[in-house]
Structures are given as structure tokens and as C-alpha cells.
Image 1 (cartoon, rainbow, N blue to C red):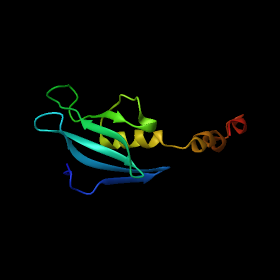
Image 2 (image 1 turned 90 degrees about the horizontal axis):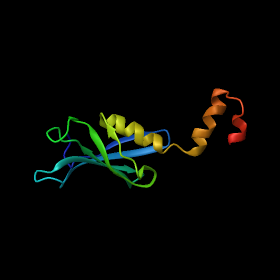
Image 3 (image 1 turned 45 degrees about the horizontal axis):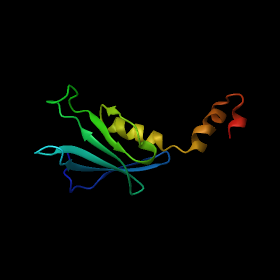
Image 4 (image 1 turned 180 degrees about the vertical axis):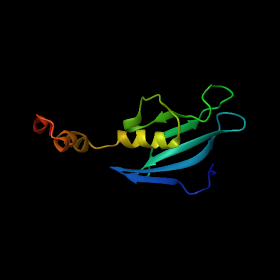
Length: 113
């Protein structure tokens, strides 16, 4: 796993610009693996890797805290890739989501936009 001083992982696509900064969180004596998730240089989430000795969820990632559109979610992810996809989906613009029925040819979609 990258250390806190390494370059962040960057993901770009569908209305997102996410950066994952790997850090150690001071939640235990030895620290806990964590990731700060930034979108356009703004903190949107803190993920922690679940401690397999305390929980039966080895290697999974938990949304410890979300901000803005991610506020109020309690979610577990199998991997950071799954977390990235879920977070990116929360930032799809309303125009993108509402335009989807038009692209698929669903009747009545014109009234949605």
C-alpha cells in the first residue's frame, strides 16, 4: 500500500475528478489504514480499512465520514475500486441522470428535463 507521502491515486471520468490520498489514521496505537478522498481538491470522504481482528470483514473499506453529497451514508466496500465507483456515481449531475431516459428512448422522458 502506498505511504502517506506518495502521490495520490487519481481517477477521472463521468463528471468526476477524484484523488485518493493514503494516510494513517490515529484511531489505534499503531494507526489504521485510511484514505482521504478529494473531488476537485475538496475533501468529500474519509475511508478506513476494516481491522480483520476486530471485525469479520478482512480488507474491506468503510466510509468513515462523508461530506456534502456523501453526508449521512454508512457504507462498506469490498475494495477501493468499488468505493471509487460508488463515490463517483454520487457526483453525476442531475442533467446527466435525467438525460439518460432520453438516450434510452423511454416514453415521457421529455417532461423530466
